[in-house]
Image 1 (cartoon, helix red, strand yellow):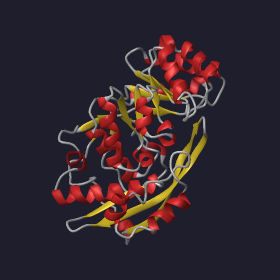
Image 2 (tube, rainbow, N blue to C red):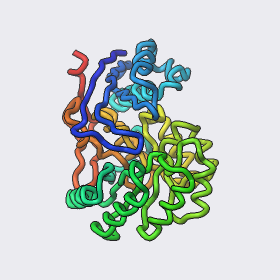
Image 3 (cartoon, rainbow, N blue to C red):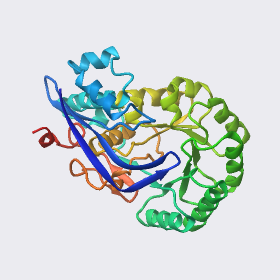
Image 4 (cartoon, rainbow, N blue to C red):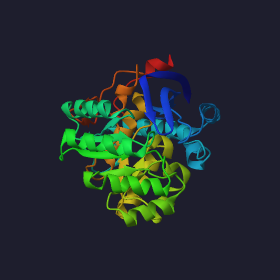
Length: 340
């Protein structure tokens, strides 16, 4: 197995309730099998995954990728596991002459709708970003909230709804910023806006609080950070979520996401696949996974524009709010020059 480190700056910091993200660092992984070579990516994001140093140590410890993956040695380092799992899946699909999506599911989508993510800013800037996204063809917007006064966030969402109209789907993402009392007030304040869901209103571990909010309010709830704090099985069983936001990088690879998606679907819980603002290899992996997930929800994959540069040209750019799934074998990208 070959490993190469990389670092990519964001065009501008992405402001969230947990702070600004301005740089992404990680590792490209190449795994050779009998039939093909596959590539994967590990781009850790502390709070969701292990640290960069822990990821490096985990990848350097891998001797036989298939044995290590099957034995669970990387279970505590999900970004490292993601890289190995994705590389093996890519190699398998390439060896079969199939796209990764078609190798992951009997039936897969050929294109995937995606949401536009709007960071924290004032009302005017938020509305301007929302209008620009809709003009670019997005019909689903995710607005970051939780970093400013509650009344300000409610005003921002009301202004966006008024600006884009009732047919555009709106999501709000608080990144676990609130307590129960604050979350209750927010739910009441946006009840008339018909949000598709409010993502992670409470801290990750507070499943009973999310379940209580679901009982008290009509606006659906999505869990994201909770899936890094508790097992997906526990999150599903707690009745705390209408939707699970599944990050392949945080869950440990395509296989883990598809396993969670199957259990969630059986329980009547929706699934949205998102990136952690990854480079092109992991974004493509997430796109193929999203294409293999049942349903037609918009996924959180339109994050290439946040990066100032990338590891290679993107074969699946966002066009009119959708991403076409590459039909060439495997992920649909060649980054072998990165290992020279």
